Every structure is written in structure tokens, then in C-alpha cells.
Length: 115
Image (cartoon, rainbow, N blue to C red; front, top):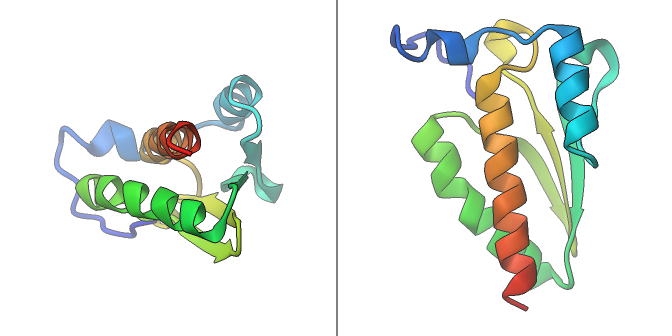
């Protein structure tokens, strides 16, 4: 979740807020991601086999978030990681959030198959 307004012209479309219809359509195709109240954020809870696996997931996602310069609001409790994605300076979800959500899903899969 990054509030930077210094987006380059190439990044500008990635930082446009998605319409409610586009967001809900994306979430329907990417269960168990859910749209938060007010359509201003994406929500998901990941559950892993252990605390260590949850930490490996977060460690895999962190460099991607840094590369995107877009950081999640997340919380870890034992084997669970709850995630909230939003582009706060746009007041909702943008393509950057969808990119990060996809990277998180891939990281979770990698951690799960690496058991």
C-alpha cells in the first residue's frame, strides 16, 4: 500500500481506481479474494501449515511489493496471514493491487508445494 503520487506516465494507468463492476468481476474470478465494504479494498486470508510457512510467504511477497513500490496492509497470527490491498491515494483498488494480489497467490502456492 503506497501513497506515493510520483507515478511515471507509464505507471499512471496502473494507478487509476478500478470501477466497482471491474473490481467485483475480478474478485469473482479470483476467489477467495473479496471486495471490502465500500469497494475500496481487496481482502484475503491465507492459511498455512505453520507459522514458519506463513513467514516464508511474507518473505516471498516482500521483494515483489518493494519492486512494485506498493505495500500491503497485512497481519500474521500463527499460521494465518490476513491481507488488505488498496491504493489509498486513489481511494480504492487499482491495477497495482491486482498485480500484488496475483504475486501473493503465486507465493502462497510456492510455499504450499514446498512443504
